[in-house]
Image (cartoon, rainbow, N blue to C red; front, side, top):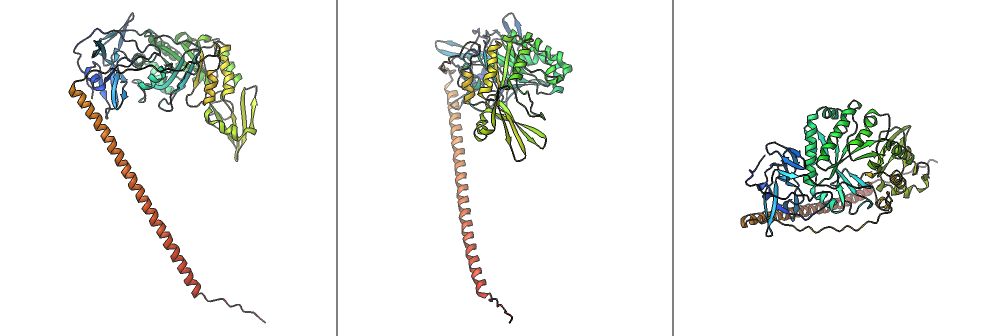
Length: 536
């Protein structure tokens, strides 16, 4: 159901800038319902009211002043909801007036009101190299990095949260404000990754429809200002070569619109090859003129569907493509992509099939096949040829030693930093090696992460409202306890039934054994002894 509460009053509130860069400030939490009763944004809830979407007006920029058009339907943004002790809140300090609510404090008392329709552009501080960067395609899995990858420069984490859609930007249902808060507390900038679905036909359609471009840009700005993103990563792959100029123009448009709001951008490119859709389509030099960083995906030297086994990222190949790209992309803008994975190549009867192998799963091979593994000093990697029942398995390993050679290129070519694909594939030896690597500013000394205190300030509720919230929390706890009790009872009954069935089966088996023994005795008693006839 789409709802909108009329704005009753407009307060002249100070412009919020708490999400600048990767700064984390104290939380100012208001109950979700209190927010919904106050906001001047259209909103709708899902069927179970576990998620809310607000519609943020289109933005107009005049100098450094942002004006919101309340008459416009706006673009959808998933409302960032924080859960604390079973209650749901919205953090007004961690976001901006784009959510339609602002607050003031008078004599220590918090007052919330509908937000004004103007605010100032945020003064996000640009990231500084050498960058240490990781892509996180499954941000709802695994624990966040507790420390910086490398303390020489800024650190970036890129969760895969957005896709281009024919109607506008499509956000992941797993987008999570707590994920953002944790990483920013740990010293990271959050730059979500946006894909084109790797679909050339779809991509061609959106590149031809420039009216869509504004929707994408506006929604990216909305999300950045509401969730605290200071940049984005464009992962546009498998694009028809005929769309090369349109792709270049599209990336430039997005980067320019984001820059107006002090939001940085980056784009991923492959190494050089003769493939029209996967390499020639990239105008790398023009990209470098538009975005803040160009990320060289220096992996898949031998791609997944290759019919010939080979390394994912041999040192000579990585070095060659890095050096060549510095002639098109200034070194201070070029980020070297490194792989946290390799591949096992199964060769059987002349055919080859590749299978991804995460670095964290390699120790088994080093333990079980040590005699099959040799160091290749030309490729700067360990190599194994392992005989199998049907052929041979071949592996060019990526591990801390091979990656160390590649990371040294960051310092040698004075690159902007490195970016790893992907979080969750590495192991502790990789993280330890990266932490101690000189990326161009000497070996860094990482400082321990000290999480800032986050006092919670809640909107004062009426006695009836507080009682209603407390009652709802108690009922929820009671329902959960009842469900747990019911589940435990069902499990107990199931166990009893299983034990009873087992006893009955044991009795049946014992009875069958006795009957078989009795029948055998009877047959023995009634059997006529055989008589052997001997001829004389």
